[in-house]
Image (cartoon, rainbow, N blue to C red; front, top):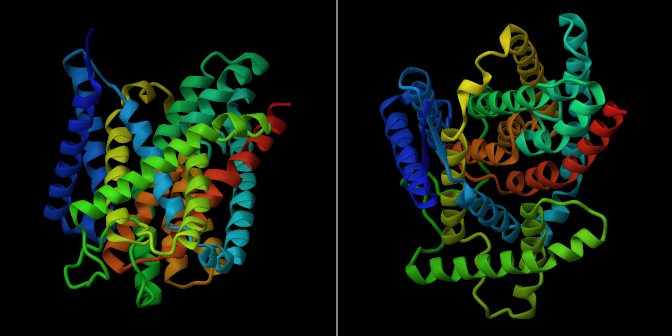
Length: 401
């Protein structure tokens, strides 16, 4: 077996190429655009298949250095925080609570499906948590964190492999399902974006949408400076947060710092140019998200999930069907049955099967085509990147006991 390891800079460059390949394929295949499949997903999955072929056919394992990916995630979530105005948070208070309740309810449903699947298929009991919310809602990070404890508790040797496989396949399914769900809802109910809204992440795909501000090298550098300052503050507060007993991922700390800054600094210094809801911030956030997602998908080692059998496919198929039905018949109606609810439905696919960046990528793909939905970009990350992690940890701990 030959191993090829790409450096950080080369990995970053390949991720950009992967995005452009995906963009070219999306332009050439109208169905991909029509179903709101993100360009990074198209290119990233193609690249993952290419590395699988290299592994199987040419006996070559390709590995990528993903340090830059983690930094891009911080940029992205800091940008989400900087766009969260206090009046939006107050307005979104009730929808946020509704979405949180819906997500907690689905977390329970997902684990009940896992319990039923393990019993029906006579699988080891220790796999239950990784066929449910630990891997699907929690993603790779939660899987890696809990696998040693669960392996020791239940005496199952391959829980890590199963958990990572479920998280990987869930990421793929979430990337492919979110856009079509939103398209179905928007088309069926003839929904439109509220007038006068500006993009929070990404810039509109249609050229006839006029912007309220212009992008220049000055606005971009100003935006990057604010992002960097916010991230530096988050790093400085990391120890303070740990001392409180809360175990928050750094990107959540960045999100919260962004929210605090954007609701204090402009009030204290009204003449200071601030990047909230500007095209420059939308552009930087879009860049960070797309390269992050391209890196995440192209680095998937698909060969690690090849021998896990038919049972895993059956369980994931059932989980996907349950998630889609829940989104269409529960989440969309209870979130208001409007355009914002359709965009949130695309994002909820990422919450339920993939990860928060996947959720945002799905929503971004929808809003690029159909128009902005700023409230969706405020409340969904708060639920999926903050509250639900705490609830999921509590549920996993209960199931392990």
